[in-house]
Every structure is written in C-alpha cells, then in structure tokens.
Image (tube, rainbow, N blue to C red):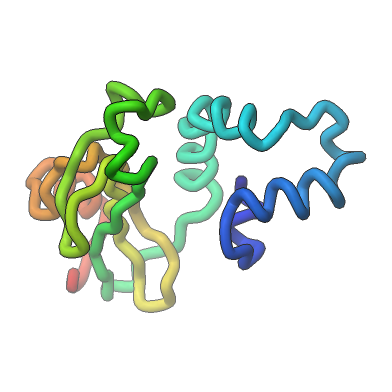
Length: 144
C-alpha cells in the first residue's frame, strides 16, 4: 500500500494486478487475489496510520495549513451492500456532494510535509472542535 501511494499509479487495482502480481511475486510468494486483498485491506489500516505517525511527519516551521479530504469507500449506490467498513464509515457531505466513507483531516507545513492528521467518520464537520484541537495541539505560529 505504501508503494502505491508513492508510485504515481492511476488506481490501486492496476497497481496490484499489473505491478505487484507481476514484478513483486518473488518478494511476496503467498500473494492473494486482488479481490481477497481488498477484503483484507481494512486490517492493515491501524498499522498504516502508525507508520505515517512515526515515520512520515515533518517539523513545524510556524506556517501551517489545515484542510480535509474525503476518503470514499464505495459508490453511493452500493452503500447498503458495503461490508468492509460497515459500522466504521458514515455518510457525509462535502462540497462535491454526498459520500460514504471517512474524512482525512491534515495539517501540513509550508514545505508540504505532514505535521498532523486525524481520520474521522464521514459525517464529522471540518470545524469540529475535537478534530481541530487534536490536530493543532503541538503546533505553533500561524494556521491557515
């Protein structure tokens, strides 16, 4: 998953079927099918967040930017049938319309390095005091 995000691939299915299954078969001899990988992927979410938290953070320079983005887990037509994140994801609304999934709240510095992040259910408002407090507790300077 980490290689996908740093590899510049258009979508994850292409990355997994055309790159991982073809070129990384020796490194991962017990590869599962793409569909099975998607079914199992929610299990690595906590490990991925811990990796980001401890290995990928920048340092505060006094100039920080805060924003959030939508992480859709399925198309709106499939919300009632979705099983992977059932009970975790929620229906929310963004400027682009309704979605089912999560929101990723990010704070970056003026170099584009991640300073802080917070993953919430899709129905959490961007101005939520709990989310903002959690994101900015170790920052100093200006926040835009």
